[in-house]
Amino acid sequence: MLKTLHVIFIFSSLASFVARVALSEFKPEVLQHKLSKIAPHVIDTLLLVSGVALILQGNWLSGEFGWIISKFLILLAYIGLGVVCMHNRGAKRWLAFSGALACFVTIFIIAITKHGFI
Image (cartoon, rainbow, N blue to C red):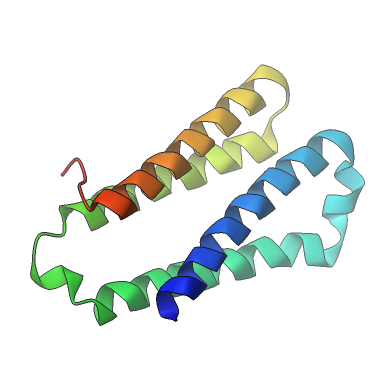
């Protein structure tokens, strides 16, 4: 059940990010609502908590865990690119958005294969 919740939070986080980027481009005033500011942080916190719980529950730190470190480092890049994307316009925004999506896909592949770059 924890894994299912984690997957739900993953796709909720991705949908939230894509929606926020689209809204910032086409309807930026919607992002000023309190719910628009709080909801992504709640979703991402639940995602992070469920991920840590899965690591602890699965006892994944007792064996080869370079893939977890790889996911974490790419997650930091995803967050950084997301911030750049949300605070810029034009080509810089779309380049950061593409990079963030590439990070998301890479994290997903590492999660499935359990093979990181570390």
